[in-house]
Length: 406
Image (tube, rainbow, N blue to C red; front, side, top):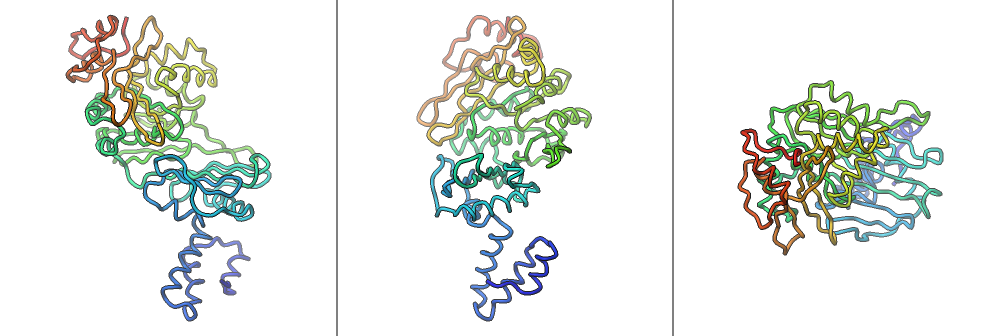
C-alpha cells in the first residue's frame, strides 16, 4: 500500500501514526478495493503500525495469558494449559522491528545500547523484549496479557482453581484484615488470585497498590496505584518499589498491597505490617509454602537485614500463606497455611490442602486455629498438633492469634 504525500510529510516531521492517519491511508484505496476491503486494509495497517502486528490475533483471543516470540521466530501462546506453538515464524528483521516498535509504545528504548526492555503497553499488557547477542538467534519477545475483567473468588471456584468450600474461608480472612502473601511459581496464577482476594475488601477502604509494572486488575472505588519507574538511558530518574512503599505509608492507606515482593522493598513492607497497617498483602515467588520464610530471608538480605531480623518481623507481620500451583497447565490453589510464632521465629503450618480436580480437599493441623480465628466451624479430618491445639483453645473474645503458638 502506497502512502500519500501528506502521510510521508508526517513521517518526515516525526509525527507518530494514529488511528486517524491509518484511516486516511486506507480510505485512499476505496475506489480500487471497495468498502469491505478498505476496512480489512485499515485493520491490517493499524495492527502493523499501531498494534502488535502478527501477534494481535493472539493478544485479542479470549483466554490467552501469554504470547512469546522465540529467537527462531516461532510464536507461542498460553491459553491456560501451557505454552503451545501457533502461526508462522517471524523473520529476524520483522521480529526486531516489532520489538523496537512495541518498546516505543511502552515508552522505552530498545537498541544495541539498551538491549532489553520491561514495560507496559497501552493495552495494559506487560512487555519484555531482549535483543541478540544476549539471546540466541533473533529477538525474544514475551507479552503477559492482563485479564479483560476482574475475576471474583466465586469465578475462580467455577473455573476449578480452588474448592468451593474454601471461598468463605479466604473471604473471611480478607474481611477480618489478616495479613497474607500469595506464593507460587511463575505463571501459577498469583496475580489473578490476589486480584480476586482484593475484590473482597470493603469498598470504603483506601487501598494503596504498589507495583513494578501494573498487572493487578482491581475494581475498587478508593484505589491508589503507584508504579515503579526504571532509570533512563543516562541512568537517572529511577523510582524503586522501596521508595514507593515508603511513600505509600504517608498516603493514609487502610491497606498496602505490593504486587510482587522481590527486592529490598520487603523491609518497608514488613515494617508497615508491624506498625498498625493490618490486612496488607502481596505475592512472592516460592516453590512451596514452607519455602516462604527462606524466600523472605533472601529478600531481606538485599535490604541489609539479617536472617534473624527478617524472621522476627515476619513472625509478627504475616498471618496466612496462600499457595498456588500449576500442574500440567492447570492452575490451582493448593494450600492455605497459617503462620505461627514459636520462640520468636515463624513456622508455617498447613490449614487447608488440595491436590487438584478429582481429589477431595483436606484440612491440616492449623485448621482448628484458623477456623477459630475466622469464626468458622472447625470441621475436618486432621487432628491438630498439641501446640496448635493450645492456640485453638484460646477463648479470648477477639479470637486466638495465629502468630502466638508456644
